[in-house]
Image 1: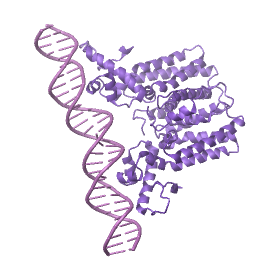
Image 2: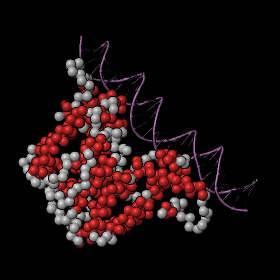
Image 3: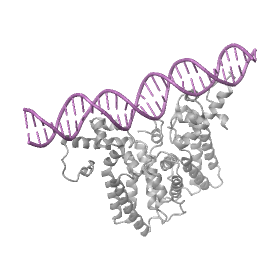
Image 4: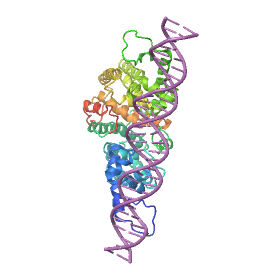
Length: 224
Length: 224
DNA sequence: AAATAACTGGAAGAGGCCTTCCAGTTAGGC
DNA sequence: GCCTAACTGGAAGGCCTCTTCCAGTTATTT
């Protein structure tokens, strides 16, 4: 699983197998980053990551020259798991169950991994692998949605692009790692699922054009 | 309206009426803070506020020794308006209309004032005036809720303490001032209202104990 | 219009974070 | 076991923000 990360840019030929301690440090950095980002978000100080990994800052910076590099490498597996969850939901026996399970899964994410929640609601145009997984998840989620609609359980005006909306909403609740906020997050998921159930009793306000929405989420950092 | 802010700690007797230019600067600082905080949130650099106000940093700091002082003074009126909106909702002819209007109003706030959204979802135990208004709003909202329930339009398991939940969710969507995100915020409000309508088709996940919830929102800064 | 107390803004100091550089250390080939 | 290239960690420099201090300016009083 963790083997998927490679990082040293395209050494197609077996140039040389990398020194063992260096690789060990790289892995330690990734593990530390996973912990720190989960707790404090992807803007956490690099020095925190280095300290927790037990390596120097320079070592961290050499392996991951930019913060984006580290973030991408750290959440590669999580993103794959996310895409996998969407695929599972698309293959669920009961379409509505599949939909509900996936939404609940998604709403739970910010409670235990703040960093990953940020990654899920931020576009990284420069990181192909991450975006490819996100695309895959979206494609599968589109299937989830159409199946649930076909089964008559999901309201017709639900849009697959409401997914980032739900993610951002959950992220807003899970601003820290408090049990109370985790409970609140579950409750929000409950409300949202209730709202999704067919038939919608009243029309929903229009959704923003997907292009505009995703553009607003680009990595210019969610800050104004 | 703006007269309500006083700041110079309790000069009960007419000690001396404060120099005119000083008062002018104070007002300019408040106006600038309102703009800056609305755009960038209450963690915006103090120097930005000073620059926009056209005063020196020292002047700003003398009027408002801590950031909390400035935040409290800046959002005093907005908080009063918020409480007023709750009162209006509690007096609405149609209880359900009152409820919906208020929720929509609340969900719109983060779209045009990021700072105020943060204030609404952060407790400031040291700022009595702010907390008093918040209490007042909550009391009126409790009336709104019970009236809407009595009218049979609001699901029975809705809790008045879900209000901060909705606020945080909206805040999560309105991470920047993009039209797309404003539209998304409206849509979220639509979903939430749908979910609130009686009868709930399925029980909601339990809410966190209010004490724990509000504790998690205390001004230890929404960071971890 | 002079005296004075209130008020002003910039500069300097402190702390945090990111980035770069370099002298020292260590793994791995021979 | 030694040599060399790979790798290491800390320290220094740059930038940003908050806070404090002080010499200069200005409104107000008489």
